[in-house]
Image (cartoon, rainbow, N blue to C red; front, side, top):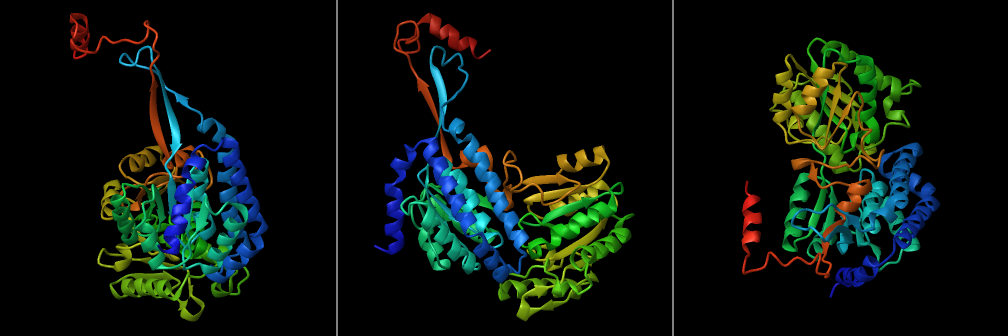
Length: 467
């Protein structure tokens, strides 16, 4: 038996104990986890700087996301774990009906590298709240963060309740071969399909968060300077390595020229305010590794080769894993950049004439994780919201819908994911909503009329139900 299997079985052995744990005990574990995170915040700042060139404020913001979710869950967990009474029906008359949210068992969280701390801890907040044992597989692409995360878990939580499994693809493969009860995965479509197949082998439920190409719609009524400022931030933040980052902009043809001028100016204003160059800015992060750097620069080169116009940016330094914030226009569907998620600081801009054109452009790609609309026309906003599909949507802003409000369930649709995290929806996703009916045995409520041989009265009642 391998070490991984032994540790998995230890988690399995704890599931009944955890299922019977109180709301207070679960809340205490979450508080202990947060204490452990805060104690290592300086180390996490340094790891983020090493791995992605992030400013410490950006890493702090990642931790604040965890704190917001954790505080919300701790506040509400006692009410969530109580049996939830539901209304009866004609068929359950005289009976007490309720739903109890029961733990699923052992949950596997396979995290990504772009926000390693949040992606390791945020999903397991709901899992712990629901009374599950948890296995965390951090990304091997962010090894410094992964090591600190393992130490935080080791020092703040029992190992047979929450365990961290380090390693590469071979570790993920072995974990996926084990009979987990629920799998939470953050990453790309290719691995997402592997996770779904592995889950099917053990009838495990899944939560998939897989990003995609999130579109931006800018109509003729948009406050353009406001839009350009927010989109410059949304595209360059974390070097574009954000699952809900604005991927491509569909702007009304009457505003395209102005927008291209503004987006270029805003990138400089936000990230080169001291005039020392974008490459020297403390606010422009780096790409996670050489492979992804090469992939992104290849997408830029392919687009230009196939007719794209470089509006701004385009420079790169492989040794530093730096890619200059880049804006392209004159796009066409033959370009690779229009077919795959960039996950880098590159924005594609294309014009439209009629509203229907926007729908056609978006429909060429799978349903995205996010969609952004910049407009002051209520009718247009409603048209685009009604006639498109995405996991989430924001009007006149971007990247503010995830990790900012635990009352907003977060997740994808179709190729961008399934299931939901955050708040009560995250707790539900990690729970078995068990329907329970209590039958009183007194003769006034223990109706046996539905048992054969059927009486004329019962036959009449049933037949009336068909009318």
